[in-house]
Length: 118
Image (cartoon, rainbow, N blue to C red; front, side, top):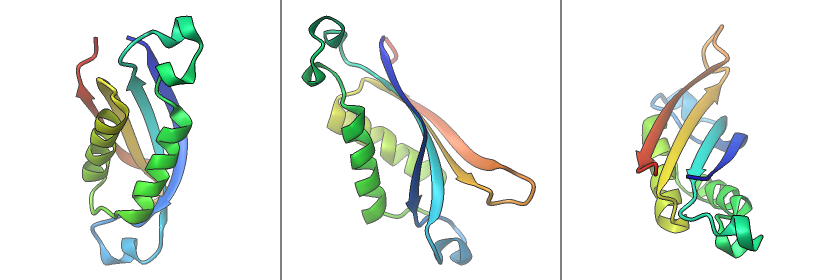
């Protein structure tokens, strides 16, 4: 399976269980690995035969501006389902991290994997 990856995507959004976390947007760091449904783009060199990672990032920014989550787990699941359903990816691995939230901890987060890796 061919995989597109996007590492250290930064997006600001409201997220958190605690009220103080939802007072102002937090910067999240996303790492995504997206399985491609086919390998045709390797031969055609045509963007229409692959998943356009620019459109993926644009869609993520849009959805996180419109929708807010309490848990990173729920956000990661939402992103995984969005990529699989809207972009046709058969498999994704998503990591979502909050930056500098806890003293002495650079990042806290969650990683999930969904779909079938072929």
